[in-house]
Image 1 (cartoon, rainbow, N blue to C red):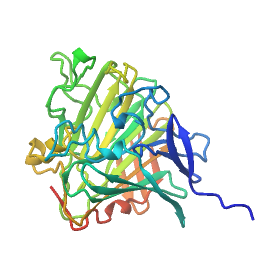
Image 2: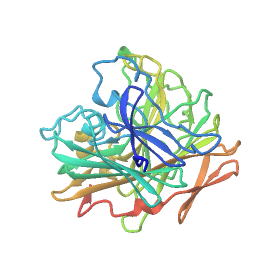
Image 3: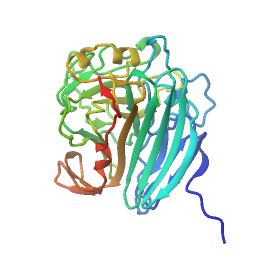
Image 4: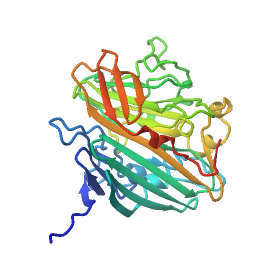
Amino acid sequence: MPPKKTAVAKRTIHSQSSWVIHNGNVELAVTELGAHMAPVTFCRDTKYPVQPYYISPWQDEKTTGLAPVLAPLRGDFFCLPFGGNSEPWRGEHHPPHGETSGNQWKFEKAARSGKALTLALSLRTKIRSGSVRREFTLIDNQNAIYCRTQVEGFTGSTPFAHHAILRMPRQEGALRLSTSPFTVGRTYPFPLARPAEGEYQWLATDSPFRSLERVPSIFKHEPPGDCSRFPVRPGFCDLLQQFERAPKHASPVPSWAAVVNTEENWLWFALKNPVLMPGRLFWIENRGRHHSPWNGRNSCLGIEDGCMYFDRGIAESCRPNPISRSGIPTSVRIRRGQTLDVRYIQGAVTVPEGFDRVASVRFSEGEAEFRSSSGHTVAVPVETHFLSAKQMTNGSIL
């Protein structure tokens, strides 16, 4: 008998050793360093496959001295603790976006169960002792990835988040972003850019916004900026965040973010449970940083879902801050013996020409229907009940 094919392959992709799994619809790669998920090909069984994720331009260069997270920077990865982490917290000094984003992960298994194919990886954290297990699951006939991260140990308070990054199209304004309703919208609470070091921001500091289409500018005589269309404003880099006050008792409708590429006619989406993940940070990068390794060439859109206070890191997310004082958590507390269980869905499908931006999403059993402002609809098979599983065993959200 011929040897049985394994469910996983090991490849070097853009200089990073990666595990690769696939089914008929989706192929995904996850790096050994940092467990960054990219490249990913959706709709691989069609005439128009979709590759929405960004891969940093220095990957095939001999760049040294990078922060660990920047070495493999691509796609989506899990940050624990999320943020720059420049300030120590109770004797701990974590690297930017935590050990999970830049340390070596261990392969556990790749196995099929019925229609599902799952890649499982693990990591032991050392700065704060804990174990992290990540699972990436594909389901036959679905263009979605079911991401599950389980954190054991790591006792204490911490921010965390997924960190998805999408590549920009060539055409100005061809990437259209929309989200489910949010409670609070704020620009970065401190000056973000340092012009003396070759960094430039366009958005105002510490300003509220109610719509992504009207966000205040740092320039007094400029009208509010549109942060729902990309790429725009070349030469600038900005951060802004949405926060949601989710219902405490009823099972919430999934919170969603959707991005339509009108140049290539595809839709990318992310779904989360807002009770555990009330924050959504946007990283808008359009050649606004000129020091190494950015060198004025980086263009991408980060959509970072989790529980955090911007990218300020563990200290400012765990201490009282303007958002947590308003009743919206910016960190979680993991008690001894508890498991933090984070579930997240990402996917991408082709859309008809003229599908401009997502105006609304209707969820039903086994399906999400995306409706565009132009009146087109696209139904996507997806198991949203995956998000509703109990996400903290005997845990609490701060």
